[in-house]
Length: 93
Image 1: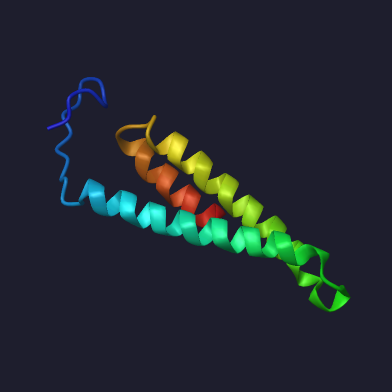
Image 2: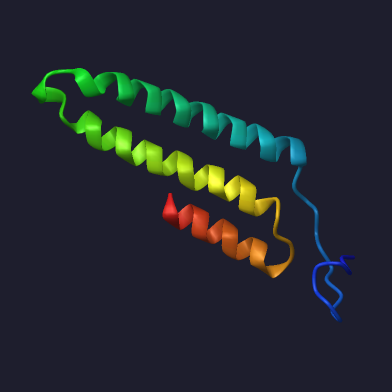
């Protein structure tokens, strides 16, 4: 039971998820993101036939910034707002 998130309300929270699995998935996504971003950044200087690398670098930079913002916001919110943060991060990325 969570009595600290909402005033004058009692929330029953189901903690079925594993914190270890959550951080393993986030680490996996982060490593894939950083790898893709670094490869796209290195491919920016290739000839014009690979001109999509500039757009890919920009999109990966936006993706990284959305997920860094998600991590900071996710750990500072509680209760009903946490679901909205998750949905917004998924849609923004």
